[in-house]
Amino acid sequence: MAAKKQQSAEERRFLGSLQEKWRYLAVTGGVFLVAATIGVRLVELHVLDQEFLRSQGEQRTLRTEPIDANRGVIRDRNGEPLAVSTPVATLWANPSTLSPDHPRLDELANLLDRDPGKLQKRLADNQERQFLYLRRKVQPSLAEQALSLNIPGIHSRREYRRYYPAGEVASHVVGFTNIDEAGQEGLELSFNHWLSGENGSKRVLRDNHGRTVRDIALVKEAKPGSDLQLSLDLRLQYLAYRELKAAVEAHDARGGTIVMLDTRNGEILAMANQPSFNPNDRDQFDPSRLRNRAITDLFEPGSTIKPFSAAAALESGDFRPGTKVNTSPGYRRMGDYTIRDNHDYGELSLSEIVTYSSNVGISKVASALSGERLQDLFYRVGFGQSTGIGFPGEAVGILPANVSWRPVEVAALSYGYGMSVNALQLAQAYMVLANGGTHYPVSLLTNNEKPRGRRVMSSETAAKVRRMLVSVVEDGTGTRANSDIYRLAGKTGTVHLVGANGYEKDQYKALFAGMAPADDPRIVTVVTVDAPSRSEYYGGEVAAPVFGRVMSDALRLLNVEPSGRPEMVDGTAQQQGGRG
Image 1 (cartoon, one colour):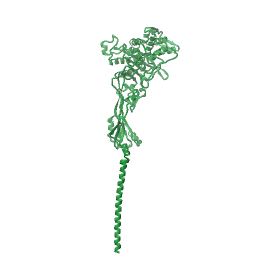
Image 2: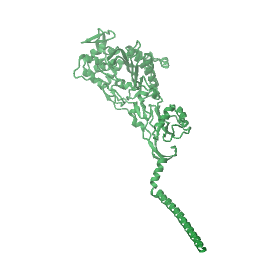
Image 3: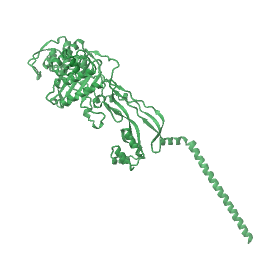
Image 4: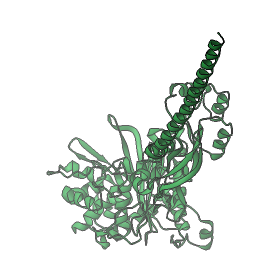
């Protein structure tokens, strides 16, 4: 019995010892298995999957951000800025990390002038996205205020915003860009590629909240856009704009245009329109105000074409400035049409026909010529063809080239009906008279070298016509353009405006085109005023005074020596700068 108990105790000790060994082996095996598993995993992570894991980490922390290129500056001929890009901030959100229910979201919305409810809905509707604009191109100080709210998922990046220091004064020429700084109108559009430059990019490190911690590497350097220097003189542009706006308001007119050219090279010194717009205030854009009327709007030139009809007559050899034409009884019937003058001028010389703007007289001169001769000269000075300025939306106009000319068509063409021009074309044609018969291309950019012109009229003919234009200002229909300081030359014009149903009975366009100083012209200017609603609507009453004031002030700004009539250019008159 004792022997059995002793054997049973030994068996229990053996079994217990065996269990302890198995437990030890199991624990030891487990430890080695875990260690082996960890070792294998470490090998996988550090050797086999190293590139994959590095790329995954970089995707979560490294980002490529664009570097916006600074758009080129547009300047006037004297270096004054007309369009500049300045650094601003754009606020954006990562909806996947920004809760629409964040307690400070209302503060952010009020700061950004946004409706809190709409902002919350935008975030809720775009939770799967990682980028959402909150407000673009704001002042950096406003962006700092927004970021100081410490709302997760709100970020800021630098962009550029276009500003126009001259505002509405030069807006039709310069144009404007959209919010992405792509040109939409004017020179901003036609020179968009030149001004834009090329954007760059950089690698940045971001934290878990998507905030940029630091820049890692420059991937591509941003290339700034090239600057653009215009031929505009901002001093003359302000002057032209001021006088035009005052005239349009004084006559309660529909609109108007001024174009000013340098006779020596065809550079545009000023180009202003009414109504205008402020490119810095996008909320008030009106499509009807955006077009550059000096280039896009066509009109019949009316009596401003008569000097060119006179030039064609002089070139024919059959007429001289003193050649007499009988205009009595003040009208001329041609079939169903009647051509009229304001008065029965009786017998007038060719020069006096231009001075007093006789429709009857110039139509009789044209009848002695031919439609082909008129059309040929008109085409040579630039009518019926592009000015070559390259401005978007330029209208070419119409110059008839009939195979067979009816007498009434020749007559109408001689005083500017049956054809259409824009204000820039008219100024370019008058530049031919001003510079002695040479046709120059017009330009909105400064020319480092004088452009090559082509002679389209003899210098003798141009000089004779120019003397006729002096008499228009001193003794004829343009006396309201006269100046006490400078001797001016030009021609008035008054034409019916064309509406949807033809000529508008009581709506006129008042015109004046001319040059100064008359003896050695430096500037050519064209003034148009649309639909003046007061009792005065003739070109000599509405447009001529604007021409006189603009030319006198412009020549003074350019330090041109006075050249008025001897009795007017005394010391007192020069000091006071009297106006005609």
